[in-house]
Image (cartoon, rainbow, N blue to C red; front, side):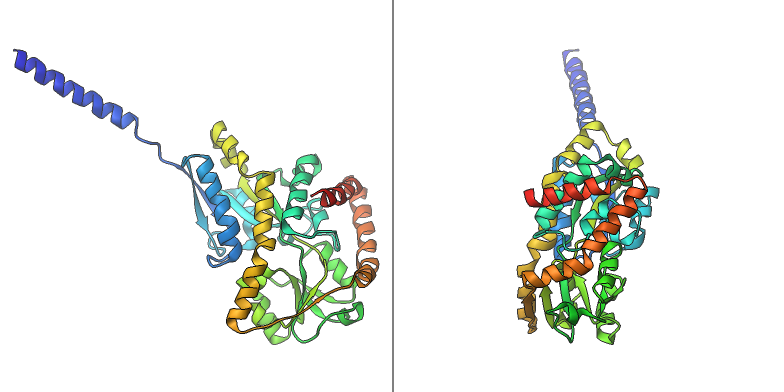
Length: 346
């Protein structure tokens, strides 16, 4: 009898252990799809987007797993916003330049010749603008904003003609981003063309473009540094980018996970991402040129010449931008004033 009792106790103990072991098994992580248009070899993808994704996974202690879809494999770059709104993707990294007119106050950061000296400081300013103005937040009412940042400052890269003066710019066909930068290039006498980044190389090669207002990151990723000969450093403009999330998916997440994600996607994240997009890529760009046997002729526009460009291509545009948005009831003057203050502060 005693033997039977001990045997039964052992069986019961094993069942309890098995039950507890099963109950304690870790829950399957919540998988979130993340769409972007960078290639897997892109500097920004590996030094900006990947660390950003990992920071979320670490902050949630593995309860969230981000499934990456690079190179437009889930959504084209011009359709990433709509894909996020409709739930084709849970999350996306995209930019306001792909959606002209949809982010008018966000586009304050794209106004030409703003005093943006680095991606880090410009991204910090954009995040703070978003946090301060409900009118900017309203532009993202159909999605959950996670991390806004900037891509610039952009500068001028040309193939055959070195640009040192405003006169040198006249008539050049230049790849430009949508919004205020397009209007600015027209005022400066150039012909702006809205050509997708993957198509820049062929457009430069065939003479469809004479150059581009762009970044080190884009030239490095898409290899059109092989065609560019001249680099003119002038604060043309910047571009606004952002990591966003499907609103329904965000609302479905447990509150503690929402808080953990928010803790690593705020102001500090914006600055880190902006730094990776612009500030940290320049040394790698120069290293690649040297390694591949290419060189570049560099020229920094003197302050007096920059002021000439500002008088022609910036001041009139800033005035028009403010007038048009204020007529629609948007606080453009306040947003621009705060932008300038933040850029000095950051």
